[in-house]
Figure (spheres, helix red, strand yellow):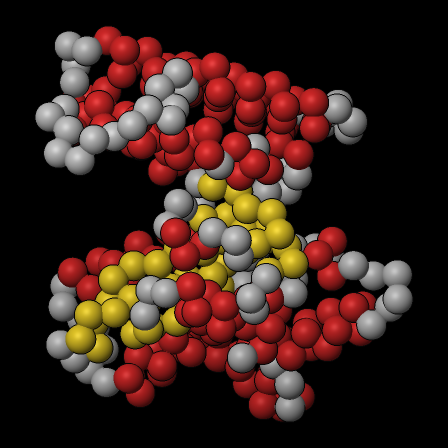
Length: 280
């Protein structure tokens, strides 16, 4: 619960979800990640309410996710994962090696992304980042010449329908493409949380999931604490883990409770904006 509060107060959160099983019931495991905290929710649904349980109805920071519809209108600022967008363009190009306009689209999309990453990493751009974002957005508009075309149900060329959908996704979400340029502390992909759910997906594929809701909740707690502690140890060993937990018993407070108390104290300052606090 303490880690959930810390994540809700963070400036940036990366979110992903993967399938899970509780007995014979199909459900999901969510991963909420920051630089120092990871929270798992195992054996729950995939609806927007599951994310809102952790972040609230409107997260004050920046959310980084894929294009799953549950994330829409959940954040004050939203960064879409570029890895997902580029993968869709790569798939079209690979499935149609003789159709050069897919390959050309992929090449130009990658050029835009690489320029965006270069702008993000350019420390000389202390000002002018908004102008760079406008430039990149205009390049997306120019690239997506088929944006807005009607997709007829049962369209004979499924690849063309997919191509139009990808262009619609890019243009319709322009405000969520280059948040990482204007805010360099934001990563352009959701790989941080994708890595955290990858092992859970492998466990699910091996049939090693939860038998009961109580077991799913227990796994959520254990995985959350272990993953969050792993960000703190140079060497994540059983000895270091047991030593840290033993210190909590002796002091009567975990490291997470101490961090939350410090953050709440900072938030109590009348000049403090929680959305501008560093991840903690």
